[in-house]
Image (cartoon, rainbow, N blue to C red; front, side, top):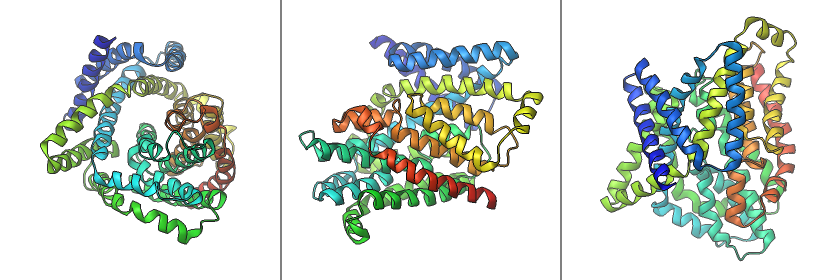
Length: 438
């Protein structure tokens, strides 16, 4: 297996390089080369991923092949392989960014802060702190807070901390360009402006944080929460700079959000590491290399999901079928409920959010159902956020359970279900109102 792992790593790096080259040299031959390398990577990396992921990929691949055979839409498969190369660059960039963040002194200060808080303050501060750190670090934020809580802490303390981190971190999915959800949704909705998603997503996330505060940390009050959060102040400038780089490149150039991220963030990270010393750069690059191997499951799953999505798009491109669906389609508010609720319910049943998002995007992004692309994008991100918070197959649920020492099902089917019920109704109503305005 080590030999296969090295081969998979080399293929991953080739995909990363091809995605960067494609930004400056878009050419059909490069698309085909990327598709071939993606197929080779999936074939090799597949052997080393979890059995659950293998089974899910085999089912999706079988459906994609059957649909391609039925419709004759074989061209969708190589197009998916070419698109998957951009996710290699995305995951590689995240691995580098996380390695660089681990070496920042601001992260150490955040750890020290949480260790001094009381129970109610800790829950509130973990929720908000995990939100802002999780916007960039995603599930890596668990590695910051879990050691502070400690494995020897009482079970209820560890459980409430895991749930608080999940609430805060997953809400960042609504607006952060550093989450795979937005990059994936952009494959189907490429014309939505990043600043619009971030503005709407931040507003919705703010509502979610307020709801979480009222439900779980009401005794602390705003003043107490503010005092608890002051220690996160040193972390905000580097987070703001990273977001500004992506936004600036997207606004000032023809680059897409994903292209801006995979070009701008590595330059920012490497520059910061060099300023800390060459030894720090070497250490971070080594951690990045190890991080690449840790995303093989997600990369294989994404590649197969993209293939299924491209074939589904071809099926729905059938004029008669699209006309039939549109004729019996529900009004826009119901469509929003179906998207958010559908992805979430499937995740609660153990179906990965990639599958739910793939189906919803393939169906609803191609039909004139009265839902704006911005609201459609945000509805998918919301469904993804809820699934990441409580889905049995979500990587974040597994990470929270492992790092805080809490059974996976207690994280998935715990107090956050109450949060989803209360906040979900409110958020879907807000999306429906925004759709009327847009």
